Image (cartoon, rainbow, N blue to C red):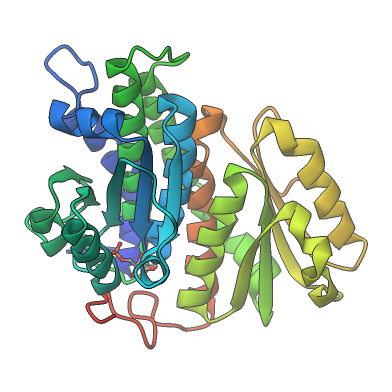
Length: 357
Ligand code: F6R
């Protein structure tokens, strides 16, 4: 039930702090330690490479998941769009594990890959929100998101839930393999949940930003580097699918290799700056578009902020920033769509689960 909310999407954005806390609990043992079925961590540890297969928003969470699994668990990961992978398979490693990320667990493109790699005899793990879904039943192993039903077509809480669960998978795999971690993930995810709450309480600010930057624009660019780049892809997808504003996410350094030609006087460019190592670089990229007339909206993280930034998100562990930097982008998309009179929960031409290839 959406209760007092005008749209499910807003309700589901607001549920993210709670879902994050629920996930922590769901994956804790009686001693409060994060835990995952040992068959799964064994399968991850034994694989020489993980292949994450997904579509749309789930693909975007997979990109973040790759960074988490590589940084924390030290396993090499490739991330592929399901519809491409199935007919255009790369050379596989000797002992791969396939990880399917799917909110619904019913996406036909992802299932086509699952069927194919099972035929080839490979092990499979599905990360899904729906227990008993097709992808969950057909894979060797399942991890559940515990996000509760997601009704709005535009995925929000499933995206953050996917990242949180992949972080836990990375952390527990590292622990099992005796790889040292320099943070306590339960504690860090708790900080994330609190930060999400702060952002959900700043809705008025994001509504103002949406009208300032997006009220009568035809297009919008999102730029970021490293993890911020992946979040930019997701922010752009959210904006285009519900507001019909043409939106693209770019790696900050890539813009000058062509796309910068599209920047005109007043073109909105949302720049994410939450990554210490590339903070200087992304700010340079923001200056490049500013000099060409762009209406730059920089969203940075506490500790990395400068005076020109439009919004500063609370500080969280640098590997977990996508869990919170996506929230302003979800809300910007929501308010941009709302102001344009769009049906936020049911955008045109889209279905919640895409069961055709
Ligand atoms: C975007 C969106 C879609 C889905 C995609 C995969 O907001 O919801 O891009 O992420 O269709 O769906 P699942 O995760 O159910 O496989």
